Amino acid sequence: MFKINAERNKFVVKILSDNFSEAIVQQEVILDMLCITVTKEAINPFLLFLRDNNELKYDFLTTLCGMHYPEIDQLGVVYHLHSLTNNHYIRVKTATELSNPVLPTATNIWPSANWMERETFDFFGIQFQGHPNLVRILNVDDMTAFPLRKDFPLEDQTREDKDDSMFGR
Amino acid sequence: MAEKQNSILTPTTAAAPEGISGQGFFATSLEKAVGLARKNSLWPLPFATSCCGIEFMATMGSHYDLARFGSERLSFSPRQSDLLMVMGTVAKKMGPVLREIYIQMAEPKWVIAVGACASSGGIFDTYSVLQGIDRIIPVDVYVPGCPPRPEQIIDGIIKIQELVGNESLRRRNSAEYEALMKKYNME
Ligand code: SF4
Image (cartoon, rainbow over all chains, first blue to last red):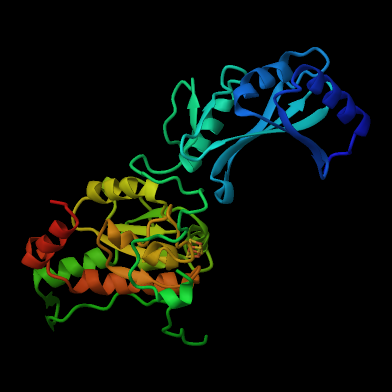
């Protein structure tokens, strides 16, 4: 775990709420990391601001991945950012409806988002608008499902030799 | 010196096939002679994708030494091998590659599925893993275990050798074999 830098967290939150008061849905510190949820309309300018603001400089996208909330029919994306200059981490979340899962791409901000967004598309079916090549990356090309959505059955559905009562199908 | 035990770990020279022998000559059928030669000089192609492959390394190493059974030379080209050893988990994305390798092998060819994963998908009952390689290529011998011990792999090889030594030279032309190939959409 990272050392919590409460002062820095406060400072970052202040800058962000000064500039994006409307867009920020929620901000909290989970375990050791500042975590900010923003609306999907604001996600792209928000990320760009995080990268380019002189005080913040989150120039490194550590990781990006999808989430599925079946109870509220939403898909989400979480971005982990790292400021190499300030040695500070931040987690940014956003959500979109399951029925129309479209989000803007982050490849125009960090080119390294390319494969991670492809993976997120592959497993969750989130469409990243503006992505240069949004095709499956890990699963077989002819797959039609999005296997990490919670309603997708984990077991291979073509097996006939297993006793269902023993395997919880 | 103690007499050598005739066990799986100390093979003796290959036994001569049935035939007529007399002073200075030995006669047998061509089929049996070829079978003898084939079975004692298998060139395996190791297709090792995960943990079972590690067990194969032990099998190939000095202690178990698969070379004693005539498989000294591993072939890493499918065109120059006659035994495809599939050892490990085969992801669905790997399936077409495995199939291509099998098709590229020249006749005669045999396949051994080593371990639970290659035989049935093993513990990986999931959307991304092929549930047994026999879904895409025909398999001659299955070796159970997760992973099987080198002795079991050697046992599987010996079962393959029995098959190789006893099958007809022209097995590939039999109606049964052709039906099998058709089942897998191969020519
Ligand atoms: S059968 Fe077991 S040891 Fe072999 S590849 Fe599968 S998981 Fe690994």
